[in-house]
Length: 376
Image (cartoon, rainbow, N blue to C red; front, side, top):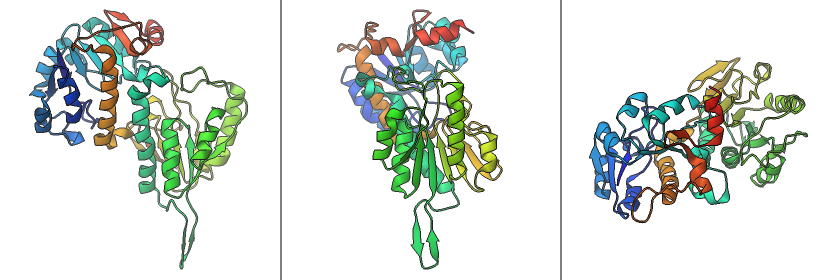
């Protein structure tokens, strides 16, 4: 059986597997083909892949011959025309928001596994790409903010006077938010945190953050670790409380997203109008509309002397470690669908296999994706 690894689009610096990951596939007597220069942006040269046992080929040859293809982002239509029929494609395709791609997958006769669709269970933790990459995103968001903010993060007491610590507001205490709290505290900032889930209060406080409480949140305990829609009454109270804290903040880091839906606008124009000149917002929900009223994906917008950086792909800024973690997630998932003899074995009785599968045998497998697809 042949495994293929493709080079990602220009804006993506990560790669699905590093040379160190190739060894595990070769131990199963699998042939590994990789598109030339796939790992160059992650500081993994073709020669290193060759030494690990991979064959270096053109993109066309990898597409035409691979039984299992690894690429983090969805393939363009031209690639789908030449991909091997029946191939298994594995990546992070965000099918709830990119439902328009599903028809092309069906017509290509391929099987699609999107690892961002894995159930958020204990058993899935070792292959949870959302968590491994969000951890990096939270760290990067704070480092980026510290570099761009026209102030210190920590408090300084000098002969020339004292500098108060920066005030950082983090909206969302998921994996990215928690790492952002820890990083901002290490840099000496005062950190305040908002999340609709009261259950995360203890985690926030254990990292040194102050938890902002708003009563009346909808129960998110059955949402598999994701955010849920809130009532109008709760949103009004939430907006008021966030506004009170935002206008005092030097840095705001936003992470709030709801799978398959537009990101909630938490920082309105009215709040932006009242924020400090020179304040900074890092919006990690930019790709799904953003958490501010002025966010633009992959752009920095300056509004009323407040800089809004829209970036949902912060892990790509640390391609070496991000690829290392992502590759390990992929190998752990492959253990579910590749037999000891090195053959594809899709057991749809396994909730992780079924949950991550989007399209198989010409049909949409994932129920949430099917609902969105049928609504198109």
